Image (cartoon, rainbow, N blue to C red; front, side, top):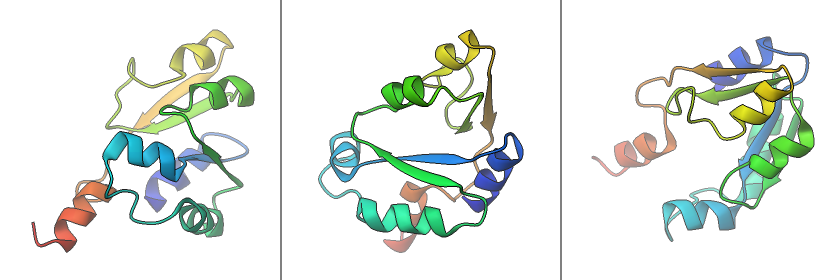
Length: 119
């Protein structure tokens, strides 16, 4: 995760990390999620040197947040390929860039949970 965030930071001047709220994660991933509460997840992200700001969004996607922030660069993990990234059209229409970085094998939250369960 830190590798992705450091690479994202190198793409611009300010790194804003947007996290789903607990309610949003629960709607998207089921009743057993999230494993860490939103405040704890936000504190962990904010403690990373490369992260300048952490914000939360309650919707299922960060579309409204992207519209409000109007970033020059939108970065997403490569599990979402170009053409499938929420907010991509908004950023591109303003002349911005969208970057998809490859996911590091075994580093997703889901993979880490499965590993901890012995799967």
